[in-house]
Length: 425
Ligand SMILES: Cc1ncc(COP(=O)(O)O)c(C=O)c1O
Ligand SMILES: Nc1c(O)cccc1C(=O)C[C@H](N)C(=O)O
Image 1 (spheres, rainbow, N blue to C red):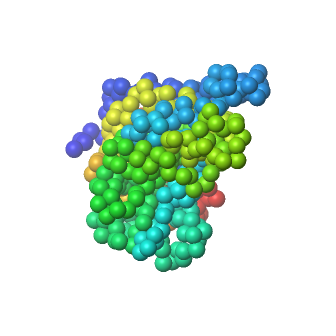
Image 2 (cartoon, rainbow, N blue to C red; image 1 turned 45 degrees about the vertical axis):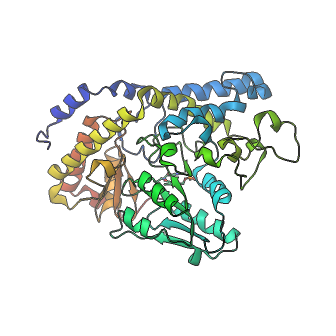
Image 3 (cartoon, helix red, strand yellow; image 1 turned 90 degrees about the vertical axis):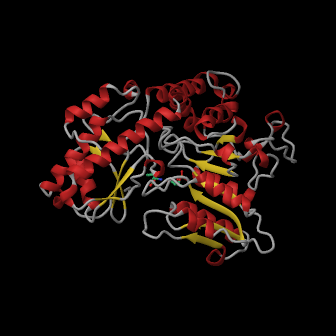
């Protein structure tokens, strides 16, 4: 139990932090504290360098940038897949950096949802990110299935967390496919992916995960857990830049599955430029690519991912948990009189890399935080999300944010703002 609530204590923790040198690798907001790396990670100098290198390859080489230059574009997605693989516990061939989260979900459902006989339903949950639900409903509609009947959403007993036992109880013999988050975007709860994958397979159901909030935040073992597929974005914890290209994982036992949404970049590399009207798909996760890669949205990932591979997910996870546990203790101690509720797991094994702080005045408390140059994000109706990021935040950042919150509450500074969200919350 933390007893020392002084700033000097936070400074001591920073002084013994082995990841501290990485802070200098990032462009941090001037005079501000960034706590939104779970929504959009910051630019690093390495990511900037690899983006500028790809730009100058274009400038100097034109079309030849596909096969020559510093980072030949034709194999860039495969090169990045190999850098992503250790972060999710996969073989390089099981990963592809392509598309976006939502597009990859469409691709994977189009490829792996096979309604047959009684098994015609998709199982999801009521707390998942809305884009996933929109995609699942539209995939059902494309197959002529009514989502109100064929999309089953497991509900949460408290609006914050899901129970694995409820999800398993919903794995009935009419379910063909399960799609769940690895980490819930609001509460930051980690689902027990190994347990869920095992339970799904015991019932002959395929299972896929949305890993947006876990990639770069916690270690995974998708291959060993036997997960059928996963998809994620690279712009949050992986710091690939706004709109950066997403990722997908397909377990090797599914290699050879015909991609539901085919396109020529899913071809075997040596065959692609044969321009044959009969596609020869790549024999690994590369088959699930569709069209030309968005090279300038891939290039920053080369530099960004280098750091994750250098440091390793275990060290990142260790610091991330130290930061969120420290923040939890400070909130309990300092903000107790102000009516906040921590809507994230206190148990470390269930906690992702951000904390969700609930308060009826959350929208305007966020605005007051921004006036103090602290960047959180707000999720309606009452959540302030705070993500102290292992590679670039400090214990002192955490201390200062909690103290600024105290000042805002003590002086009721939030009353100067309307309690409504901004357009991009
Ligand atoms: C959990 C989750 N799923 C899906 C999305 C949608 O991702 P994209 O807009 O990159 O398709 C997001 C974030 O925007 C997310 O956090
Ligand atoms: N994808 C985003 C965007 O295009 C603009 C602003 C925020 C986002 C996000 O990623 C939000 C994020 N998925 C969330 O967890 O709420």
